[in-house]
Length: 413
Image 1 (cartoon, rainbow, N blue to C red):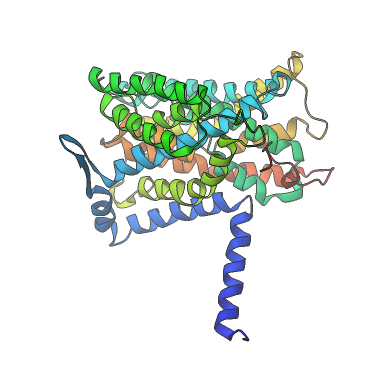
Image 2 (cartoon, rainbow, N blue to C red):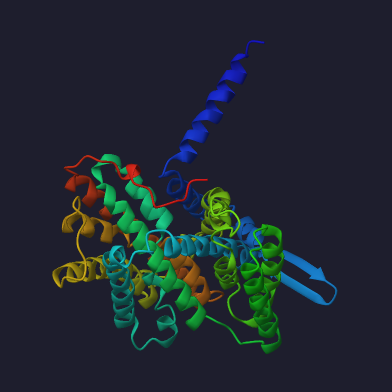
């Protein structure tokens, strides 16, 4: 039967959407769209409904056990735990079989990642010194948003040297390790010993399952849910349960080495994390109402510290530490890279956004300073992304080999 005109149009539309979602830049574009949508809604007559929606109570109870939180915290504590689980899977693959498995390939991006965390923190602290409450946000500019940064780089196509994407991916993975450590060590609430004991009991169970070569996913999900709930009640941030759970997922089936539970899970979560969880997190956390802006908002220590930490700190830290590692003989530049490309990438690393917003919510959640923090993140990330794009665009790539041609190492299924 011949297709009608409507069916043909719908078919072409579905095909176009599928093609778009397969592009490297799609996740970053959707993330940007969610941010813009939140800003538009927050500055219209829908702002009240937006706040009511995020404040809506969602309760889950089983007997005397109850979790009663507003929707915003379910997104930040619940959905972001899945994001951190996905990050944990990426880290495990990278360390065991991927780009972090060979030490000689780690030195250059590791140096850049360390500089990209240390220098922004130093700048933030210098600009907020003496303001005790403001100093609590010291870790905000230390983060890099891999989805946004890679999305911007993908828009440049063949203008970007192929190995620059590998450099950025590896740097971002190491940056994520640093962010996870910071959250675990410095952003925890009052500890509940009983809940922490329950969380601790989950660890040997997961270890036993891993050693017994349990490759079915449902048992891990069940223990992971108990671990998440226990950590939520313990005071240790619940999202870290995702990283802990990922560490115990078997990399390979001992009976069939061609099967990897880690890679299978990572692939199955890619779309959900990129196109649902991160955009929803951005939508829930980026809604700033500019009518509420006070006269000194732009010069608030938190705003200034985050802004310059991302714009100046990131580019200075990533570039200088990378440059030093090469000049001191600890690392080598890939053949298709020179320092101008490293500098352009260092500018892109100033796009903190998702992880910066997350750390900011831990540092300032529920206080008026949360507005200042978000303003600095949005402004700093926008300027860094624009400067990074322009720098890499005008630098060009004499090799004319697209960054899309080189993908992070992923085991074929």
